[in-house]
Length: 316
Image 1 (cartoon, rainbow, N blue to C red):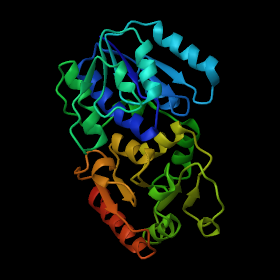
Image 2 (image 1 turned 90 degrees about the horizontal axis):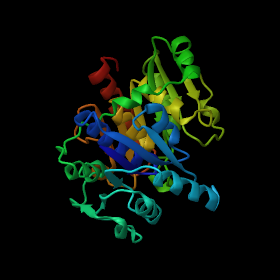
Image 3 (image 1 turned 135 degrees about the vertical axis):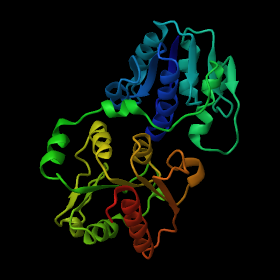
Image 4 (image 1 turned 45 degrees about the horizontal axis):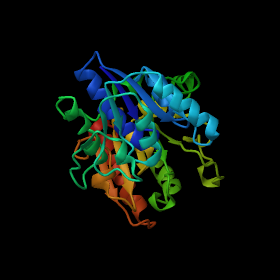
């Protein structure tokens, strides 16, 4: 069975798709998957080896790049196309694919639904993974998923492997991700949180991760490593894989952490934690808080983090 997955973005959505496709490959090992993925996120599909081919959508590549991608899609015959995105661009990719069965979301937008031969049931305002796992029913599979993506463990980072094995050996590693795609989703107090986390355990180190590299003088202290702006997507996955705890806003790294089975703590300010929290939301190693973005929340978040570390790792 050959399946084309159309899920170019965003990072968190791609991870949710990987949760479903990983489960599909476990249930149907003979299944061959190709994946249309945005160039910013292609590294995670390629290195994880979850798909045979990564067909790369270059968002700013111009018309020639689009035509080349569509030609690549046309070169293969597929038994199914799964449009997990449900937008105009993914609908166009689905239209040009050679397949008798083109499956899309019930809540598809921008007329993309015109490309489909079948739409999956929309179960209402549920977690994003619970929507995508309905694709499994189309090919007769049980729709249950674990939430774990073992293929992510294929991703390596030689530079940071050496960093962990030398500078961070025998340390308790906490990864903090203060960024999100939208500013209103960001909790504003990761800097004082980092300082509070290292103050309670001399073996704790904090890795501050993300793309934006602004200068925060109070973070220039021992055992806080400001790695923002220095890491690739593969580096991020590798560091999360080696973390004792990951604390993040509603963002892609939050979902990577959950898919790797790491202790995951989500801080939510503007989105529904039941729909967008770490999957599954009720897992014992997952925690979520709905916050108001006020300074007095730092103590609360730090205390919950210490309780998680003690419960899961036996170290406060």
